[in-house]
Image 1: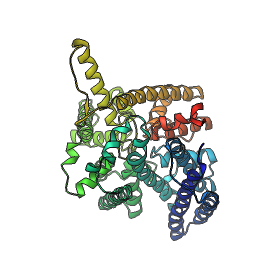
Image 2: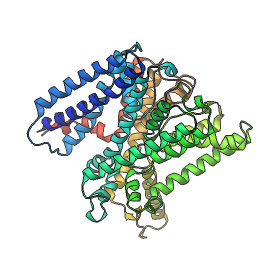
Image 3: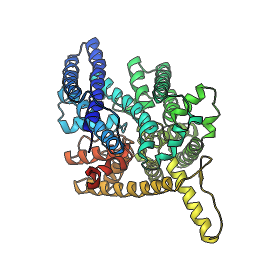
Image 4: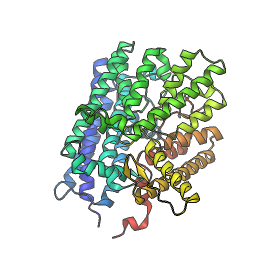
Length: 482
């Protein structure tokens, strides 16, 4: 039997926290003299009322969760938060319906960064701050989920990190609460540092804070329709490049660095492969942009570095219309959309560690072909690679490719052209943001898509953010039995 009381109680606490967060954009609008402050107060009131009633109905009793309840809670929490986070967009003067509002909210909380809104340059500060807050809160939620929940659920190979977080000899801090607190402190410190540097290179204080929140969250929501290219500042682009990379690294390693173990950054194989991959991809694209005469070497390096890092880390900022860089560049960007950053970071997509595990499995299989009696140990990050983790990673790849194909076909069926359907499926499932093509590319947005297309993409964003299996398991009949 399911214990729904603890699930409802935890969701109620999250809704109450969400209602409190709505007071910040209300304050921003109030200080700016914008009447939309009332929109956020009403939204906060509705969210608080529902969260409060849910808490009263579910308070008391044991709040410990078993495996099935943890699966249900994870998906239900993200859906519930997105549903209520959409209220300020619905009640505002934007004139959008609930479909668009939900799309914007779930894109924010999953740190995808796809948007249906235009006119950001003149939008009230409260709504701009709310978009940034959604991504910032989603980012820290994703980190906590990757460190504390997904290894326990053992989906997609995340159990590889369970030993690391449970082994008494390797704990970074004695208690899970202390770990979460330390990670949050690092997250805040990096956000502040990013905001200071953005302001130093010419952003206003408000723009610097909003962009810092979405940079560390690798979300990509901007306060300008032109994204980062609006500011036309090489310094801002290099700051963004550095902090997008910072957001895509495992946050537990920052805590270890503070404890004096800085060497563990390069000692982590994820980090080494991630940074090496970035260097190679940026180098290839820089050579392409220079060789075809689009830019001089310095500009080619800056644009390649910023936009490649933005796509690989699944941030989704754009400093140029890379869809116009030619076939080689477009194909490369489409491929690296699936790459992602490190586990335990704010980035999405497949993630580096799964490619590493897949490479180990392929190398082992090739060795077995020419030497059937040989012994070839399979290791990841210096540790033996368990059979169940290998199977989980292979299954994740298979399910990811299948889901990508189904989403692309569905988008094509509702009227999107081939490039838009394929890139839209890729960018939603990988939580990147902009796709390719004139409509949903870096110079466009998702506003003109049919409503059914937006719901399909919303579902894909959730699937990608929650590592696929966490959601799919809810559709098994046997999950609900017993």
